[in-house]
Image (cartoon, rainbow, N blue to C red; front, side, top):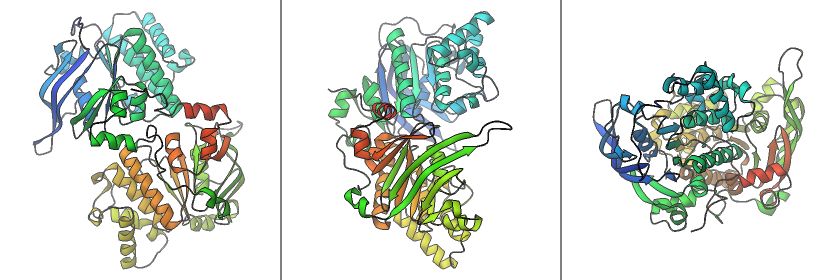
Length: 557
């Protein structure tokens, strides 16, 4: 592992230039398959960035936006190649440059902030040393000055107590902290262009806002241009001067962001806007509201004074991850639990699923108090409550076919002979709108949205009463996310399902939930109907979450 993308601070690159920092003209890129045949994935893309400007490159997975960004900085995969067009950095075409020549401008003229901070940082080297590596390899600063500069950079990106943090390893930092370390490395040599490739997509909304504010500050101070690669039109609405929309590697439209959002000319852009929960004002709910029906319904889930503690070591006090949480979910309705990472929401979800026994308090589902169940009772209980995870790829066994993945819970509970199981599997596949032709395939052969549909089918195969959805749509593009949420709405109506929806995305909560609990540091700071909480938040933390929803700052044309 090489750690942070760095490189060549002082070597000569493109010189002073008064025009755009970056100009792409008719850029085309292809990838070779195992037989050596090339498939074009980027087709004649043209765009430009002026100094200090933010341009958003938006589109779904597979649209070509990351490939375009990788081509700009010379980091295409080994089977990728530029087929044509130009990449002008400060007026100099770098499209045909060798890796050695490109290394001379990476870091000095152009830097990358990647999507996943965990895989982008070396786990066996302190974060301070990784930031210092940029300076050590590409400047002549003495060691003492390099280390002082590292502390200045960490402080600049908002990392508290830089001296202590610099000595820590990546696993000791939160996701937001790790992303700030990557930004510190990216700005160390004051590049003229920063490419942020989905750099905030995995972050909580409040952390995301702080990172975006930081990039705005850097842009204002030094005139750095930012190419923001994202599938989130809410982020583009808030932060980008101009937006370029890609589909299938082709530009659908581009222009001032406010104009593109207010008057899209492409049907694809209109669909993206309709599917983006943070900017589709007045949009109908994706899950039908239970409304007044909820008051007259049975209670599907009742949580009373839930406390969940974990041992922290010998002679050390236990860590209280969940502290006195209470809520109820009427049958056939959706209750959302929201909060940042570390708020206790996933711990609450695992307790609801029976994966851990509460330290104190009560969880009653389907009339059964989980604290009163023995091991056999818990096993039978799990037929009634199923969990759908965030990442549909890691939650599905890559060695199994789709048919076996959906069937496996039936095997675990000896649910009848094989012909009946096969019929149930086919019925569930049809229910989640997938063709039977997928039954013989493996997860790697499916798209992210298809894999999540399989995960939902597997969760439904035992005919549960309650589904716990733990960030179940956060890893999906907005269009696929919208499709999955619509599917969940249909299933709730057809099967009278009750949902507990764990998420950090309040824009989605606004579309799908009837009631909501807001959690912070293990405590429930606010609870109520979605309308009450969103329209009249009582707690400052809730107000901060709502204010941080991407799209709230969108400009008007």
